[in-house]
Length: 150
Length: 305
Ligand SMILES: [Zn+2]
Image (cartoon, rainbow over all chains, first blue to last red; front, side, top):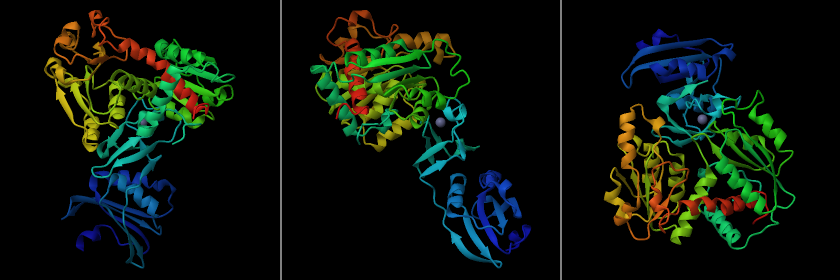
């Protein structure tokens, strides 16, 4: 418990835990915090018995949708997501990798049309473990390490 | 899946049945030409990147089935679309044509065009990505030369790392009972992702550097060119280039009826002394582009069923 004290508990909202430290900020970006009016607490490089260093994001007064949680799984498949109400966990959301990934990921092929003309990207998930996705346009496949966000 | 209204973008979009449908129509058209099939229909050829060979094949195919053609070939490879987006260009052209044939240097351009277009788009090459009509004519050639597609040993020779035609044909042949031989220098071997897919599909394959060693097993030898641009060291290029040049003496090591294919143009990887042998299938292969492209044009416009 004492590890958790680093970030204050939230009254209501969503907690994303067990994020690999190095992708924590990318997860933040994925959820597009610019649009939020809510308080967000982020911590990284927390000690974790399970995974070494981890990150955690706590968003006050906002309940993430299943779709948003699924997006997170592109970067961090092992996260745990809890919906908090009155300081206690009301619900755990199971993270599921989506079949398709629209818009949020950038194709890593510089010769791909999505990097040249104004087109939304679209990838199909061709393998879940290890993660492999294929660009709908140039058909290059990418693994998790290649994934960059817009 | 029905072909009417469908764009032909990638060989990955084809089921086995789709492949066989195109081949059977090509066969029928070759046997019984249909000079009025595409009467009053217009095909637009948009060659943002020049490819005289491919364009001529499409033009010849369309003219022989009675259709008319409009379009352009951009010989200035540096300017792709002078300011106008591809989307807008297609939105204009689809008003004039019943089918669009497009070649572009940018990967994925054909898929995007098909999303913009109200009429079917046929991808005639999008950068290093796809050139599905080439693959279909390769398949048609194999079927014609061997009388079947199942139970064949197919050898791919040369630049397998960057060779677009090899990658696509490998995907297409995976629908059939095939054994594949990949003969290339280590630096130019098949990309891992294709080999993984073969494993997944239970297609046996062999990686080899020495063509003569495995030549006796092959029914098809699919040659490709090793391009100088792929090498940083010209000495390395000159050394490897010679290893994958073939001439009539290769036939001492092969099955008597082996068929040699090449997407053309060749430079010096196939010696002209092979041209007169019955094994040289590469010129017949180029000719097969006509009925195959006719079949595709007819199918996507709904004129063939
Ligand atoms: Zn792409």
